[in-house]
Image 1 (tube, rainbow, N blue to C red):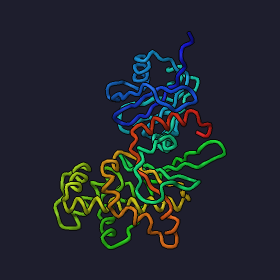
Image 2: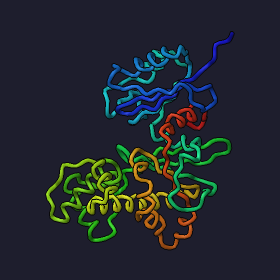
Image 3: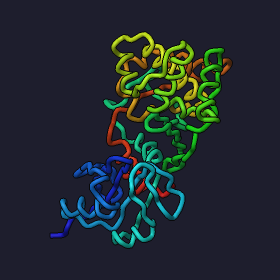
Image 4: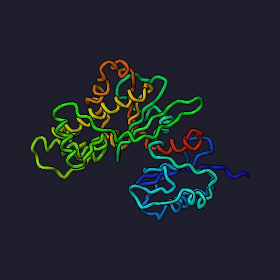
Length: 319
């Protein structure tokens, strides 16, 4: 009997590495496992253990990494894994070895997320034809887009999280000045990520003359969901700024196909986001309001979207 052929896909962050097997040319995930990166000296050790457990031999793979992937050397930002891509391909015996950024994979994963994992935050139920924006506050702020081509979708790899934060009122000018005193240049990622939410909370404390707290992003979201006045104010402000930035990105890219909000933060407070100033800020674009009102936004809750995107990248000749 002929042994079934598989390809390897992976979504690798600072803490965990998710692996799965797929039938070549398909995206349906099989044998999904999560391995702790700290337990392995390098990528090849983790891959070999995973493949060994499933008795699988592979000749092609696509792995997504939460770090820059443009160079020959891949250096994980938040763990100890470092490798040369050609050496790793030889070590693993791969004929095809694609390496993509984790947010590129996340963007491609949107093509395979089912409706039950899409929580609509305003706008029509179905997006228009054309570009789709993918933006995600998490450890940082990832920004990507999907551009339709004749047969495939082309993911745009961007550094949109590092655009300048634009203050729109006196309080935000003071917040920007406070953040600037700490970081110099103030990008939107200084606010729109886990650490950024803490930065925003501390800035609000400074504006109100409160002492600087020792607090986490989970403390802020938990406080807001429990009705704490300051935490509620800060989380609403976070959502408002996210709406403005996402709306600006839609206008820049012509992303009338819709906006996908990804990352580990937003799924924790979907109902809060719906009730927040997010949508009003998203639509408040002057003469372009009518376009924004017809652009849907969804929160993505599929934790396997990155793996699905890696599978899509493997079969997509545009990647």
